[in-house]
Image (cartoon, rainbow, N blue to C red; front, side, top):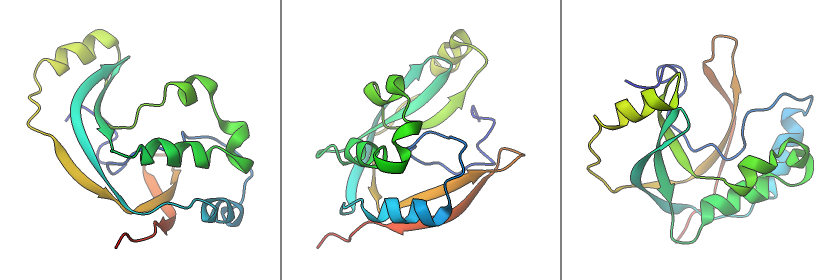
Length: 147
């Protein structure tokens, strides 16, 4: 309702922010294979306005989301790390995108949080944003199953 890209990009946690490069998919697969992490439970625990966005803020007990974020921004992806986003990384699912902070605040007032909501994080995906802003998943790597 509040995110114009909702129909084009499925809900997701962004671990690496969009970038343009000549890195091949094989190189990304090799890089992602170095990430060692088991599946884990995460929780949406609040809605929050950040700049012109409304986020469903996500956390997990072991800080696995932040660990994945930090692990991915090594090696071939390190040059694409924005120090501002890295230091202030806030795991979230975007639920609203607006033209201004004020518009986001007005929309935020209409929301009622009925959580927390719990879900399992089971895989990492590489997506390519198409010219029409839609998402194309080109690779998925499943995390190690927990017993």
